[in-house]
Length: 312
Ligand SMILES: C[S@@+](CC[C@H](N)C(=O)[O-])C[C@H]1O[C@@H](n2cnc3c(N)ncnc32)[C@H](O)[C@@H]1O
Image (cartoon, rainbow, N blue to C red; front, side):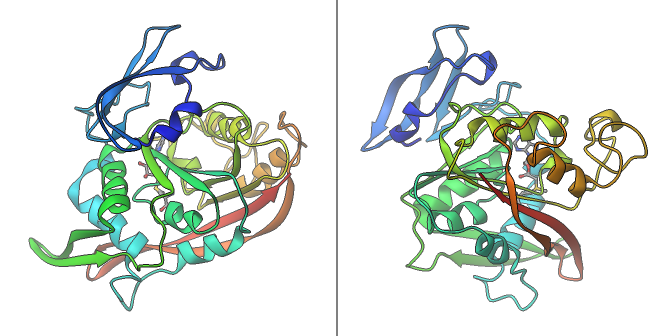
């Protein structure tokens, strides 16, 4: 973990209190902590840094993380294909990440990509902002992103058919910046960051994957600057009771505060018409982007992800 993060991090367990973390470095290398701990002197939580990755998910994700659905090798290669298929010159590759990136204006300051998966949007934002943090609760996704930021290449075993696999190597173009990125394990519903520090924020295809979508958006609002800030939200609104009870959904139901379509409700939230997002955001753009995930050579998932670009 790059030491530059130390001044941004707080204890996620103590939220809404914001308590800084004290580092202990067992092994450092230049600007990085490779092995060490981050400790909250208030609640005594100790968060490990293992092989360069900081584990700041208070829900017990640690070095021997329990497996979740995003931890399996086939899903890792599916996401690597989805994020970097264009670098493999795959004719079926999605241009979704370039389309999302185009919506963000270049700026200065810090950017956070919540639910960053294997990092493509984070690396796109590294071209536009001073420093980018990707955060995800999948250990294998975060390790893959961090390895990419260091090695600038990765091998992947793409499922072809049955047990057959095709081995590919993806290589980052020389022009891509990776020195101004960091990837940490954490929960997008309790972001381990001080309030008001980010100039750019994203929540791409994650709001329907968290157990408390409103808490996730509240956290985005908390860590965002109060002015000169951009937020890119996108989601297919695949609400599911396997992820969150209906009461927590921000759309896709008949009754309650969030009845109707998720996109309309999130626009109303951002504009301060429902809930308490303050200062209110202004919606600059909205639309949809086709995004694709590959399962095997004859099976793809095509997803219409509805985006909202807001600023304040
Ligand atoms: C559908 S994927 C989208 C990934 C990426 N944003 C993209 O658009 O390609 C959802 C991502 O959210 C992550 N995720 C799910 N719940 C999370 C949580 N509570 N905190 C952080 N990340 C989470 C998953 O590990 C996964 O990488």
